[in-house]
View 1 (cartoon, rainbow, N blue to C red):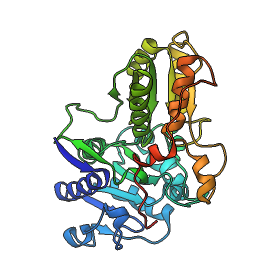
View 2: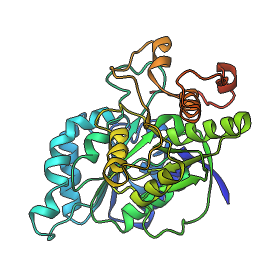
View 3: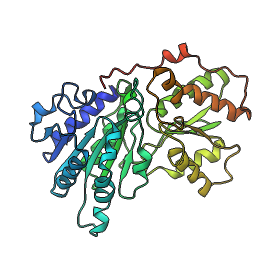
View 4: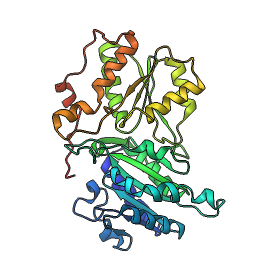
Length: 352
């Protein structure tokens, strides 16, 4: 086992993609500047040349069309967005072209490409730069959507996407995770990493989580284990468009208590989809109603004081675990205070 940060895993994955496949092209706004998409693309233009690694105009629709054309011509494009909000400007290309090409032409044409989008809170990003838009893209057949929660997922999923997968992949990377460290091995045993993973075994409560909420769930699980002896099972969905339904249902049937933790809004999103999976396949498995952990249902505020209340964290998960296990919304268990949480979190370092 080696230790690697999320940022280092992304940089390694990008370098490997360019090194191992001479047809790989990496581009996007900010790819070649001094920050290199939070350090994940630094030095690659010099190493592989400006024809394969390049910055772009602020024209996401045109640049996505370029990527689709490259993919149809035998190249493997990696289009990087320093904020996933900008992907809204490429919706026509992604939804009406990339997602449908293989279907419309009877499999004669494929569009293998990777679109990276950075999501999540930092400091004062405001309403237009803090969104997590994974649900919009997961709704569309033909698009594969992943939300790697750890360095291992980055290495496995990106390697598989570039070298083996023949369809468009959209990956959402949470900016808070970039400095988190993880244990990684050279290669995961699973042949297809576009699936879900059992992160922690437990018997009392199931948490189904994505992205940075997997880390929040792990912190919460450790806390309630130490304070109340509660054993939490954690499932990392990882691939929103190909979740391991059997894994989710098996866990739910065992615990009967479920929390879904997402980085976005609950309505029509990951929370809604997991609830749908359970309602359709095992409606009698829940002992108590499912709990949702999500962003407040409003645009993100810019001020730090309000932003703090907009995003959920381990404290909200702990509170909901106690509610499920006690059967009461008002329980007598203590929640992690701000000083305790500060010891666990890394501050976002910017610059964007």
